[in-house]
Image 1 (cartoon, rainbow, N blue to C red):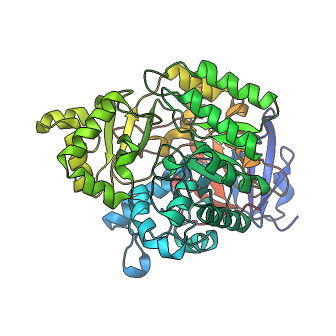
Image 2 (image 1 turned 180 degrees about the vertical axis):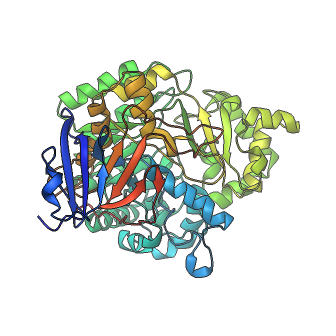
Length: 552
């Protein structure tokens, strides 16, 4: 063993495999970990000056893996730059730093971005300007530019800002926009071939899988056959097809069957993103969807899912509009929204529905949707659309259209659309792992970005008894690391990357709320990223040891 640089001594090890907790000491050297018998750390250092983390009475786990984030741009070129004068104390810098720290403070050492069909790559060179506008609305953090390939994306991540590790999927929506723009039509053979080639290259360079967001333009314009062809590319690399289903509401069972068909025809492992049955017409449907997933797995299909521990979701506001409104991209959408006849058509489609469209508002109502981030109307953040419209004397659709126009399309929302019993069933399923689905934008983001992992451990695990500590940790570490081939991560064993969390199992809990969504959790004593102490006594240090993870 190399010279020991740090000891974690006296703790109870929950190693990420799901095995029972056991006493153990850990030695860290060269960013890797060695598991020692209890008390074995006392003489392992050979030097009393080796730093020690005293974990007596605490639990030590692998660093958590957040399998579903939208944090792609948080450490990319385009954010506040120290070289250009931005520094701690500046309002913009501090707001972004608070967002960057939120996952780390609850123990997340690896994030998987590029979900729901939106990644920062790949793209044909001639499509870069058009895609940049789409990504501005999607990610909302500065003038973040798209990248032609995974290598360029990785190079754009600034190490000086990288608090934890980042892997990325290849987003189908980005891929489609980067080849054929925002046209509502099937791809030509040459366009589909170009998408397959870009996807193949990105996966070979280290992207973690292929994702779709089939409620979001331009992904929603794709048919099943298109997705099958692209998923076959992922299958050749042994990487998963990760999907935000075409409908998570009244047609969720039909949408799930499409995903299962794609997996079966393509041969790709299937990951169902943030599995939920939302809206009053789908409440209780997890009683059918979860057994369907279990049966598919029993029949030999490699299918798993992820879930966040809340009854509210979050997304972009323009996703509340029928898909035809966004054909041609954000610029075309904003131009349409100025026209009274377009607004009337939107109202009619929300009231009557459109075949194949999820129709979140029609399944719930504007009273269930709150503004999370609206740069042009900060006073609206935290308030529900129905109330905002009533206070301004406007019809809700007119209010939404004007809000999108004022903010140049860059508005995110929180949708209170799920039921607690459905969330609990998915959390308890042996097929589920944990992902925050965090949308880290300034304003009033969903508290899941800062609270998901602590909430599972504290509220659902310890307080509600829904999960044992070992099972909860497995869903956050070993299971996702295996699914996404994160070699050397997710399980504490000799030679593993020294991504570790030290926590108090009796005190850990989420503190973030919808009113104060970035409050850090309680009970997380220390977090190590690649062997460096990134959190000590619940506070972030200056360590920035994160890296872009390439999955081979």
